[in-house]
Image (cartoon, rainbow, N blue to C red; front, side):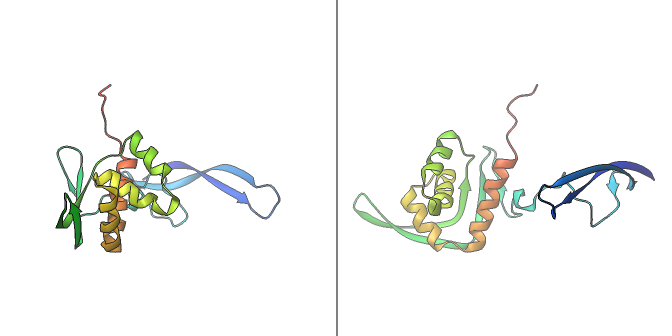
Amino acid sequence: MSARTKAEIAIDLDGDDAIVDETEVEDVAVFGDAIAADDEIVDEDATDPLDKLPSHAIRNDDGTITLPLYDTVRIKVRASGKIKEKVFKSLTFHRLNGADTRVIGEAPDNMQNIVTFARSCRLNQAVMNAVWDKMDASDIANGGRVLNHFLTSGRKTRTS
């Protein structure tokens, strides 16, 4: 067993100005690379569960992620004078680029999530609006996790 050093921070929130007192503390038990469980330790290296892909998400070779939906969504679309039914059993998400973020930022606050899905899934905004309205909330939450994963795990494009 060895010891590691950790910083303990105490913040006085009762006063007018917050006072930060940083002291070094010894005696954190280490077994291999695992630190002994302590409810008072905040693990800054831990991955936020919302940044992890849903277990049923499929990583594609081109960098996209296909998310099978728990509930199939069916919508009717009029195109070229004909009405067709579109069936969505999954959504395929693509990484966002600068143009996507500009369009998302220009959308009204109550539409930004839907616009983000539309841009990432490369769907027409009207189609995504209809799909969104019929999507199960768990599928929406899982889609958000896919988007979070893209934002927290950048692709490596350089080897140096």
